[in-house]
Image (cartoon, rainbow, N blue to C red; front, side, top):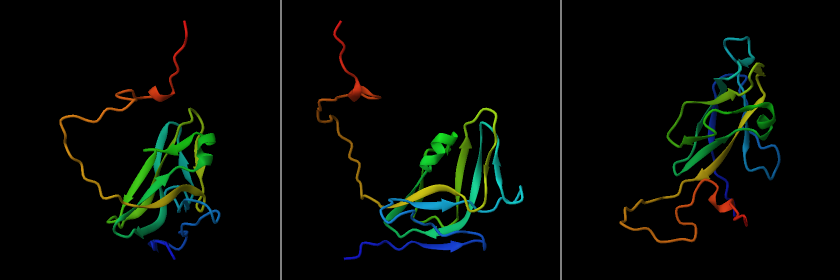
Amino acid sequence: MNNQVIVKFKKLNSEAKMPVKASKSAACFDIYAGVSETHGGTYFIAPQTWTFISTGIAMAIPEGYHAKVFSRSGHGTKEINLMNCVGIIDSDYRGELKILLRNNKHKDYFAIDPGERVAQIMIEKNVDTLFIEVPILDETDRGQGGFGSTGIKEIDK
């Protein structure tokens, strides 16, 4: 049984690269930087700022699916991240995939060359969901505890 989802993509320029899995078991596909039109190819992100990174590709995600865009794990050690942490691409979007990266460094620029991996995407099936307003919610052990409440331990005094 083949469970593959076909996602059509279009190169918007000759330098664009197809999304690729780094290994057979990888959950996400690597996305690559396109060419910066303002800096001769390389992107330079100033400290404490963000910029859109062109990928040079557009996709046709099948109806009933969406793509999640994640930062690369290696960006964490370089103080770089996706501006909105996780991006969502809906199935009806047909424009260029652009990656919004933020440089969290305080004094150093961050350079991204064309063809460099800048993000990763995962294709997922949408879940048909119906929200129903109710006057009372069912009780749970956690209740209204939030923001780390499940990891708090009582300390004997």
